[in-house]
Image 1 (cartoon, rainbow, N blue to C red):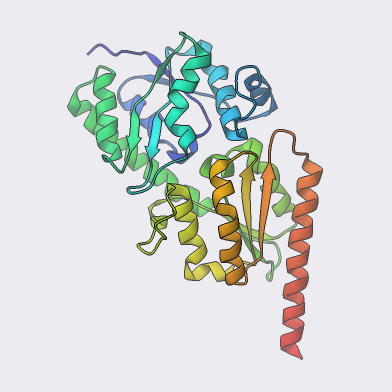
Image 2: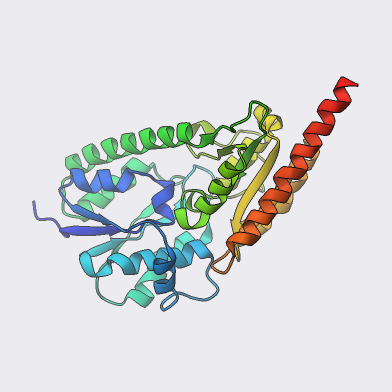
Amino acid sequence: MSLRYKTIGIPRAFYFHSFPGLFETFFQLLGIETVISPPSDKHILQAATNVCEAEHCLPNKLFDGHVLSIADRVDAVLVPRVISMTRGYIACPRFGALPEATRAWLRETPQVLTFDINETKEPLQRSLRRLAVKLGCSSREGKFAATKAIEAMNHRLTDLRSTNISSGSEPEAPLFLVLGHSYTLHDKFIATPILQKLRSMKVGFEVMSFDDSLAPPKGTPRDILWCTFAKMYNRLTSPGASLYAGVIQLTTFNCGCDSMMMERFRRLCRKRDVPYMILMVDEHTGRAGIDTRLEAFVDSISWREAAGRNGDQE
């Protein structure tokens, strides 16, 4: 067997957080070394400003920075064309053009390795098998690697779901739901300051997970076209949603998909009498501004719940 590449780079951004553990396991089983970029930080973002479009959302800028951080150490960088991650739904349009956009500024070295992920058209396992053959492996080797890689991803998603809940230090601490795309919720540069602030305020919170238990329900409105938002709708309309003291939706500036759905989620939460806040960040957002908004939102809900308990006692 003659493999097409000896080393493949995996940027720790965008699709990396939607398929945790999948590609590292897949390439390892095929005998290909992987190089994963380090966690997001200000240096990666700064490097991205030299190559990315100013109109890009923050996750897209970080993605370009992650590609740059490993470009000189690999034979190819993996940039899949993600069209659909859930059957019947589509992904963010940026994912569809990402391979060509990366090639445009990356030039010739390293190469951009791409393949289609389109669950509406064919299962992920079959797409991975095609990729294995493209890399010089046999169909049998590809099937084995794809099966094991998907198993590893599902285990990782289950683990993430169990670790995405942080209980408050007080018995009656309110519980908040943090909504967002997986590539914002699990990117340390974007989400960690927000989650750390919630912990410091000693409130409980649950970060939305994206495992199979959150498959879109049959009653999801047909005009919700995107995979992630169908799952968000499922979470906000589930019986347990009314148990949250509030919902915090984490978004990034210039996200077109979020701009289409945030007001809808606001109305949905209002209908269920659950306070809802949009927390928008970009590379210029200051920590103090985030802290102030979170403090005001959490305090207002704490006062509201305290008033409700006092009213019940009278």
